[in-house]
Length: 463
Ligand code: FAD
Image 1 (cartoon, rainbow, N blue to C red):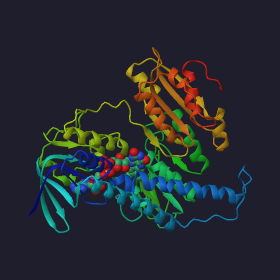
Image 2 (image 1 turned 90 degrees about the horizontal axis):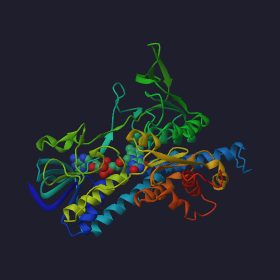
Image 3 (image 1 turned 120 degrees about the vertical axis):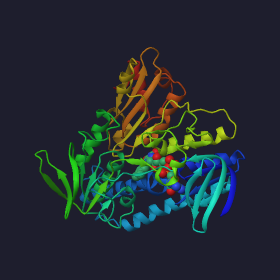
């Protein structure tokens, strides 16, 4: 069997793994990254990027349809709007190709060796990689597990045929006439909103009594309102029970069942850590439920074996995986590092978008922290009005004793781009007074952050 040796072997070339490998390469660490699929992982190939491409295309088509219907308040009228989804998917695939090619280039520039194949532990320092040319044994002083997560299947609705996961939903050849979605988390609602805008009749079935359980009621209300305006039928407290010839079976409250007619059933009920194929049983690592347990340096229970990204649990977000990857590379390079981040921004790219950074008022109450909350609505923000969308708000949560900003949430058009300002404020220890004293450009949505901070101090100017 062919054999290679290195100081660091990274299993998985997603945002966690490839960032770890690039930083390690920059530090002069002899590194190999192995992936059985495309470099870039779920995020670049079937997650963050392709979903945002579809969301953008859907929004553009929706605008054109509104113009064509003659109902735009802007007075714009065009004749007819059509979509060639196959071409949209081709465009999306072009972006994915550019990005995955870019990752390969960055790894090469950092002198990282890449290997295509499926990795399986033999022991903590030896991994067997099944490649197209046969098996290779890789001996490594350190191994980083960055194998990510994959979509969870539902009993009675196994993936295949018309029952699809987000991966297939992002590459459909044509817009389904009727789409049923099981699960009203962010992935289901982002994709569901996009297809509603593309013209599908969308029904969302959710077992819980509310959509987007990670965000509070005030934040999700504008999203629920918009879903209704787009004609999306959201069935809460409803369980999907299986497949019928012509659609999705749901259980009724009376103990019977009803069929929701549809051409495709998209199941988005969560993602599970990908630990099955890597031979974890050879290592006997301590687990935290289905995820690999790590400490504040992303060390597992075995010396020299680290784990980063989705395989370590929530929040399963690309930027968290990247931050962990960078940190682990520096630890292996001898730097003194530990996970000391105050917040991981979470963005939901629904319509409108939701951002949550740090503590919400509910989180603060649960922790027994006394807070002052300042809220500023976009209906009092000139820029939001010029964008035709003045629903939503920015909310600042500050410690009552000294106005230190502990959390910021927002819902509104394009608020994802405000997430950096919110995170900077929290990580740099800003107080509401600091944000209130900074000039925010007019007219911008960011003025709502300024005003909500002034709200904490009790003197918003425009509300
Ligand atoms: P992954 O990106 O999952 O990468 C793991 C890699 O490991 C894969 O390439 C896989 O092929 C490889 N691998 C697994 N097992 C083996 C093995 N045995 N041998 C070799 N290779 C192996 N996050 C955000 O932050 N923002 C978003 O907007 C967002 N949108 C999303 C939309 C969708 C539809 C989905 C599905 C996810 C989205 N996510 C988003 C989540 C994001 O994609 C993940 O958090 C991120 O990709 C996790 O990175 P990772 O490096 O941990 O794992």
